[in-house]
Length: 445
Image (tube, rainbow, N blue to C red; front, top):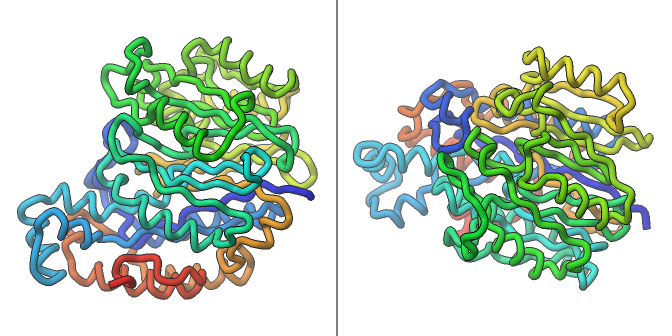
């Protein structure tokens, strides 16, 4: 059967705000306390989804989390009515309240690791939600993420869902932001590439000194076992600790891949020559690497522009498209390199620039916003069709955003009980639009 790579983008939630919660994410830290625009953020994300749909790509939508997260605030000892819980948290622990209001689930590259049926022992598409243990505001996502994924990919004949790994630092799992699948054709067995920042049990592996290495080797190995992957079709690589300390908190900030192409910075991995050789061998000798030299684009340029947090896509006509944020165009060195790449003899045929400033200001570019799911025709027919982008869904979701979202949020607004009511009202309607059922805690009590 013919197979496709679908991109499922995270819909930005109604509480999108800048609280600077993500230590190690330079953009997040630099923009803390600025005013955000949730409405614009959601509309920018939808525009990208619709543009890829219009190009003939399979494009889906993943719903955001319920925020503010009253369930977690109550677990942490805040009591009373919903309004009283918010007021108490704002007074006694404003940073905890901010964490429980984060719209970070918009970056669905961190939602899960996905292995297509061509790679797995049982011939099903496997999903493992990421536990995201390194950041509290993200560690509270995986249960709802799992329910949303199960509602989107519900057919047990085609899809297998695993619980998140144990929520301890030894098995820190950041999902597809540190995972790439290479293949010659999407329906054929591919090579799954797992990138980790450190080892939890083996001190021989180096670690960064300034910022945390969020993803462990042991987490990657556990996911590969759970998904029933063949050892001969799995490659593990360690991020260079120095680039983590430069703000490369996930591999998708320094490298991106698709089919038989790896687009990366020359300092992305430890022992990069060996990594490239392992991938080439696992791919049967047919593998292309576009390696950007530091002399052309520094690591700082890559972090500032999010050059590698791009989407590398195969268009229906066979050409390769690189989807990049507008920040790449605003960096002279990056843009000069990209225009030479596009016009020269490289596997990348076309560039597409998107304005994603609302997401970028919190440290998430085009690649952060999407979860890739390779599916054959039967699997494509089996996933929830209400979540697949279409002209009708685009119009419906734009109207939904315009009705329910604010155009300005500051930290002080997070304790507003009306924001909670607005958010729950919007999400309750969204679950009906996307036919998800009761996936949110407030719908399940």
